[in-house]
Length: 264
Image (tube, rainbow, N blue to C red; front, top):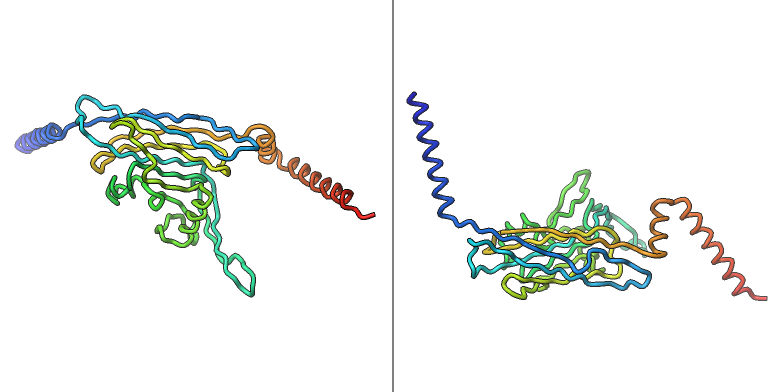
């Protein structure tokens, strides 16, 4: 009986403390509403790149402080694929591949945009947990039979990110998001000419006072149309036929060249 009474008193005390804690901390709630200017981008033979526009707003509830300021981080990730980074060395006067590292199911396109530097938005711990910044995005690799991500300054990881950035496929810009009003925002999503085909996921994270307060996501798709779509579909679904056609075209090109440049 005494033990049961003690447990009851402890339960009441814990409930009271929990209620006081909830009453002392205000319940803030924000909601993000976003959209992109085009949910389907078509790639034609003369496609040279495009820029989509992401725009949205922050909806507050009655308990949210009116003068609260926000930060926004937008992450755009393209279709995932396995990729290989190789190390070349000059030996006996020629460049040869001496080592390689395989990256598993990594984004073929990756962009991170924000309204100010990441260090000003959140602490390093929060950045790592929320994968804010290229250095904090997980890029799984096959390392000596194991699967893991490595430190950002690993030579293979650094080379992989650097090469993707040179082609405009990996990027981070800390002044790309613009707040038009305290709650309305926009940013551009540049898509280079060699942008991969597939589905792109867009994740939007809202921060206040260094903490994540809301997030949402949207998506858009990049597709090929016309002759390029026919070639891509044939290569993927009818590889043997595609190979025969390619070989035939190569033979015809060689035969026609021999006729044009024939010396009588």
